[in-house]
Image 1 (tube, rainbow, N blue to C red):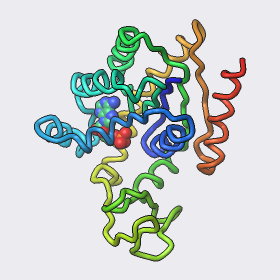
Image 2 (cartoon, protein in one colour):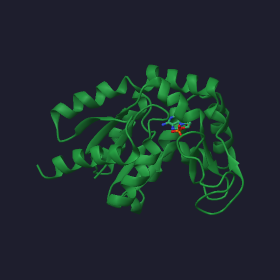
Image 3 (cartoon, protein in one colour):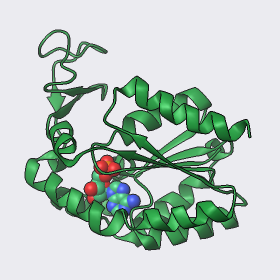
Image 4 (cartoon, rainbow, N blue to C red):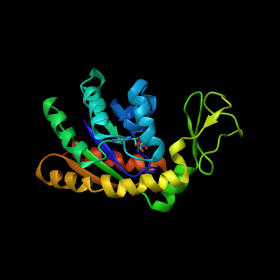
Length: 221
Ligand code: AMP
């Protein structure tokens, strides 16, 4: 089962991708994480774009994904979180899948109001030691300054989660990424690909339940 999770920054793609990956034994392919962890010249170049809230050039990200989806842990299926983000990436993904004899089963779009997106993204932070995610309002550590998971006491915020950069990322989502939804909606009418909208404003468990329902319906015909 191969899934694309679609949605603007702060829609909850990363959270839902992690839950889905665990539940269905799928590989989670988060391009933002891959780029943040990239080292050497590719990592350095990517950081220049990421800090500005700009998209990293298609050629870089396409090469990373092409290499990644051919690996063994993707054989049972994968979830794409943050890819594709441009028309070029979407077309290239089709070619890659064709070459690998794979296909897409679901494109799931998480919808959240702009105001809520900004609130979610600008308030989020994570444990510097184990990466556990928190939020200034919605998910504070139980004991202030101490990570619930590992007891660490250092936290970090993504540089591109500043309010000005988030506005830029949202603008890019609207102008470059959202238009490719039409590409998938058109494909979904022609073959087995299922396209679904999900209300991403709800609680994490409720969003998960809605996604599961979409998957369940298709798998059971
Ligand atoms: P994310 O963690 O998905 O919010 O991504 C963080 C940043 O990584 C984005 O703002 C882009 O700069 C870069 N990035 C992630 N995925 C892609 C992609 N598919 N194409 C281009 N840039 C990307």
